[in-house]
Each structure stands twice: as C-alpha cells, then as structure tokens.
Image 1 (cartoon, rainbow, N blue to C red):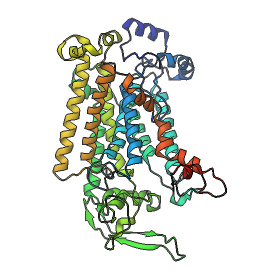
Image 2: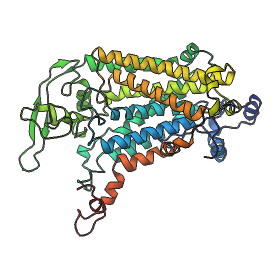
Image 3: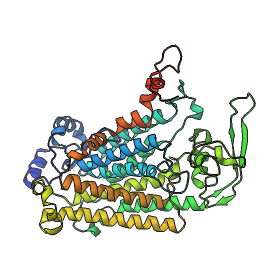
Image 4: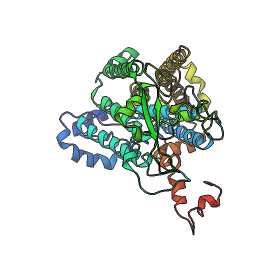
Length: 487
C-alpha cells in the first residue's frame, strides 16, 4: 500500500480541470466483503453513461495509484475477523463468549453487526461521487450476486463438518440463507440507496446531513416499522416438523409444536421462524439451531448435549439465525454504518492538515481550535454522540422487555451492537488515522484487507476439510487426525 495518505480534499482547480477533460475516477471498491474504502472518487459528469465503458478502461489503469484507504476501517475489519475466528474456535470451550442460546448478549454476538456496520461505512466512501448511476447500479448488483452465490456454495451444504466429510448436496435440503447471503442483501439495498437516494447539496450542520439523506432515513424507519409490526403483530399458529430416524428404516418422527399466540419472542412461536418456514421451507433452514443449547433443550447447558427427559417438542426444529425477517433489521445495522461513513465524507480533513498531527501532539486534539483539528473533533463528536444514543436506547429497550437476541435480531440488539461498533470504530480512527499508530495494528490491517479469504479458510472450515480430504488407507488416517484435530 505504500505510505498512508489520509482522506483529503482535491484542490478546486484540479477538480475543475479534471471535469473539463472528462476524467472519471473509479468508485468501485474491492471484491465483496473486503470492499476497500476509496477516499477519492470521480467528479460527476452529466450524460456520461454512454461513454462509461471507454472511460472505465482509462480510469482503471490509474485506479491503484489514485485510491487511498481509510486504514482505521481496515483495522476495524481485521479486529472483527480476528474476533470471529476466536469465538468460533474457543466458543465451545468458553460458553461465556459463545453465541447466546437465545436471549442475551455475548462476545460472539457482536461479529455480525460489526461486519454490517463496516459494509455501510465502506459504501458511503465508495459512492461518494458518481459519474453514472446506471453503471454503479449494475456493478453493485453483480457484486451482491457474487457474494450471494459464494454464500450458497460455502454455507449451503457443500462443505461439511470435520467428522462428516461427504460429497454432494441434496438440493431439497440445501440451506438458502447464511452469513454471506445476509451481507449481500444488506450491501445491495444500502448500495442502491446510496446511489439513488441522496441529495447533492453541501453539508454544514448535522441537520443538513439528515436532510440530504432524508430518503434513506425514511427507508430505515419503514424497515424498522415493518420488522416490529411483523414480529409483534403476526399470529403464529401451531406447526409441526419431521426428524428422520438415522438408525431405522421407519418413516421420520413427527413433532407438533403448540403456539396459537401473537407477539411471542421465544424459540418456538416467534414470527421470524414462522416466516422462514412458510417462505423458505423448513427443510431449507439451519439444522443446528442455537436454542438447542438452552436449559430446556440440553442437559449440558449452555453447551450442546443430550435432550432432557422433559424437553419441549421444538428443541430439534430447524431455525435459521440469518432468516428473512431478522435480515430486515440487519439491513438497518448497515444503514447505521452508512451514516457514519457520511460523516467522514462531509467532515473532511486535508492531507497537509493531517500531517501536522503526530503522537506527541495528541493533546492539541483537545486544546486547539484550528480548522483541521476541528474537523477531527467534529467527526468523533458526531460518532460518539450517535453511538451513545444507540447504546442507551438499546439498554433501555432491553430493560423494558425487548431483550437482546441475535437469532431474532431484535431492535434493541441492533441499537446496542451498532452503538458499540461506532464507539470502537471512533477509538480505532483516533488511534490509527489521527495519531498515526499503525505499527501496532499492522496485523489487524492485513487481516482486514484479506477478510474474505480468511473467512473462507477459517470460518467455513475450507482448509480443515481440504486437509481431511487427503488420507492414506482409511479416511481417518489424514493430516488433521495426525495432529490431533477432528478425532
């Protein structure tokens, strides 16, 4: 990446000169989840869509030299990837950091909201300026489709557990939703809104920032209202499901679940699960639901274990933690990140001004009233104020009975996790982009740049399954067994 140059204004004369020449800078980010944040993007060129292909070819040669990364966002993404790997590997040993069996919040439950928050920030910077909305829309749709297909391949059943290496997938029981699929949906909707639903005026105050993106905030309000209305308003009737008996040729065992309620947020009778069963089909949901670790369903609570003798009938029912209705509220997390990115775009800091800062002069950040320091202070103030409001709102709703719940992606869970994400990002931004402390965060920065690759190798068990696929004499004689993994 070379030496880091923070986000800066283009000189007015240079912008005018480029506009006269019709030069278009690319606004395209990196592939999918990684989505590099480009600090510079092209000036808008009216009626430029007909020549976009030729202009793109010319600008693509200059893109690598022109793009600049917001290093704090790479570091934040790397921290999230490291957190994901840690909770995946250590969650079974330390239940306190593993996903909450149902209501509650643990360390693992922050991973998904953090990723969605990061996607939102990236989109705000990627689409800061547009030369052709149609071209940007086409690229956003293609990028979302690639991410969606990758998610289907990785989480649809092609890669199995370490002790269950098989070949082939039964499409009748293939899982449709998943982590990458949810990110793809949130990315596409937020990208389309950023392309089409934003004003063109200048932003000087927080009120004008809200006004310029009022249509996006209206959509957020609509999504939140839709989610809350369906979650608490839909009537959930009785339902049933079947579990095949592996050791017998007899037909699958039938389980009946009694509901007949409205507004329930328990594992059995919530509207999130009902919508997924009706639309996706119960055979396409996640077969190892998180509520199987609840005290009602496991004698080894909070770990997985055998069913208690008086276990309720719903304990073995499939449930997708990345379902349709819960993804509606997950999209809102992405829009919160988009708002934080707008603050970066509209409260700018020039390169020469940033160069004035150094670690021994950090105190100037709090004492100086010069314009370049004020820009940093404005950014961090807006982030911290918004984050604090979200955290307080989330805690208040949780105390009032709307519990934190990742599986349902409740409104209180969205508010609290988005607020924590904003506080963490503001801290990393101050340390990395303001104070210039890049050396201690180099590993996290590298992990953030290669987030998608690390996700595929680590979280999806691609590398362990690949190693397990090569054996001698018997399938159990593989490299993983040799080093004590997968026994």
